[in-house]
Image (cartoon, rainbow, N blue to C red; front, side):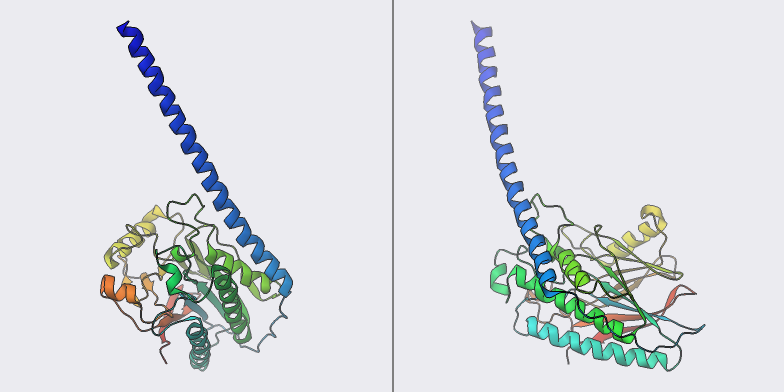
Length: 339
């Protein structure tokens, strides 16, 4: 009798475990279906909106000089945090600062061209172009636009920046990277990382410019991008890929980049570019040649960074000029956008 009772008890326990497993599987299936529906709805909305707008007219090509001493402009724009609201920042402030960025890029390019040709440009979009909805419990109280409006507005701003570059340079290449603020759902959500609103923003802008013959712009399914300008090779990341919970000290980032250069990343590169931290900085790598370049944000008055990390920074973006033959940065600018 004792043995029979034990077997009946084990059978009952096993059946209870099976019921619990079936319940968990059913809940997971419903959650995945909900995430899939959200992703598909956003993608369909993006496609419909672009088709409704129609393609933009191609930008007339500028008259630029080429020569043996020609250099290449490299513009790193990142962490726009579009629709975020603080005491000194919102979508209109972002748009105004991008216009200021255009004017300063034009002036700095003219300064370089007074000495040597600068015919072409590469734009690196570094991620966190939108503020998103799924990063903080009180996120809805810190934005001035819905997720759809963030996508639509930021896509247009990105396209306008590329069109500006096409008016200033003969050929333009875009390399795009997505950030953590474009995430759909919580960190535990069963949504692929690459289903990111930043990536949808880039696709929106790319579709609007699909008739630009002087523009090269590929997709970004991975979260590490390769940048090549002649003999110059660099990696572009957002910055949350390194460290625990998206944070790492400067030396941790540099050591990570050095390990990638030593063979952990299967592509030889000289420099690494990142944003994420909203501050402008540079650190040398172990070989004494390459560097890690950290670029700031268009945002100002970041209360989260001020209170949580005692950090603050003047809004800025980054412009480099590269020698494609020697494969290195020759000139670098921190473009301040506070006035």
